[in-house]
Length: 275
Image 1: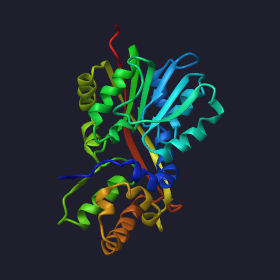
Image 2 (image 1 turned 60 degrees about the horizontal axis):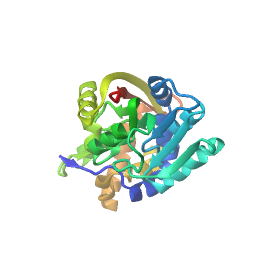
Image 3 (image 1 turned 60 degrees about the vertical axis):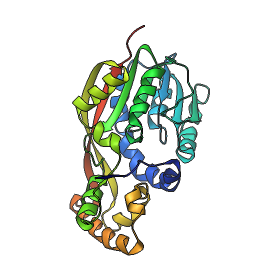
Image 4 (image 1 turned 120 degrees about the vertical axis):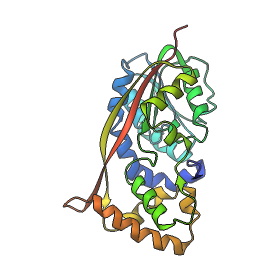
């Protein structure tokens, strides 16, 4: 299987607009469960959000009065997060950072969050170790990951259509972390190896609402372009794939023609051992 690296900062530069429109609204639906798992959060709580994206979890934490640091490797994503955090600028900061090498002191955050962030890292194990390192002794780490190795929303349909269309090409994958953290047993083992304990996992389902089925494949290309196996296709190959993808996506359209796809995630709470 050819494992495509998860999106780089350059990939996200191309995909940021599409992400904010079609991906962020889905990931934001899981934030209430993430914050509930991390509770209590409020004034005086130090919160670190790793790979914040457009800032959904960071904003929700900041709204409680917590002191928040939101980090991301993508300048484009971070710009959106910083804008969203402006109402909380006295207690919330957005900083460009590599989630596998954070420049924060050991044990400096009461709560560390990563909502579909660390799962996208090429070096996801290093990301987990950094998250545990940054967590205060006795503090809490909450991680959100997908249960499907092909991701969520329209991506499983996209991946399946790609495989059927290009059966002569290596089978694509979104990255090692997606499949490595997609079951309770895998997440628990990975967090234990990273130094966490007292781990609980819950399954949460929400529905992705996409564009109208007609024209959906081309509308969603901005998100597909974060996958190197897609960007490697020739224009002729894309013209073969996109109509087939649109036909498959049409099976998920409601009576109003809008795409809706249930997506299941794992929300995992772990604790750093007390000193």
